Image 1 (cartoon, rainbow, N blue to C red):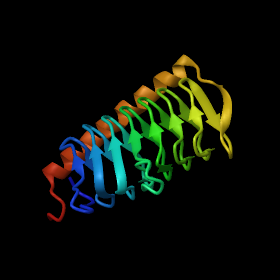
Image 2: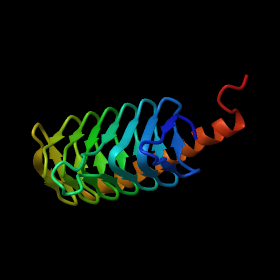
Image 3: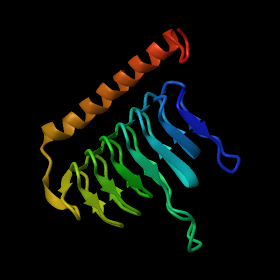
Length: 186
């Protein structure tokens, strides 16, 4: 494990030994990261005000930010949950929402508070899923604000699985290189 891993209010992040955390990633507080997941360069996962759960074989690509909402109204606030086999593209913003297994979030997409991206759904690059919206399984949403533009084809959904497994393998390769040559060695 590498990156900047910080406790917050006495809660340490729990990161699988098989997950890859890039040297420039930051993970804070009540965060759980599953097996074979990859948190790439410049990723920030900040579980300081609520919990963040990231499943197995999930990748958060470079520059992605994941955060939560605090308990302002006595309702417990809004954690962030990201399922298994999820691909989140570069520079995405994931905030106090739920992303189901096998979902695909495009580059520079934003998924806001209380939004749900269901299993095998896709949010296009640059889309903004506004608070409380539900991206149904098998749907593609695009635009600002995002809306349902069409249903996904079976081959597109199959590509989500390929992307997740590709990035899990890449995370393993990076992790193996780190073990072979620890950070700071000559």
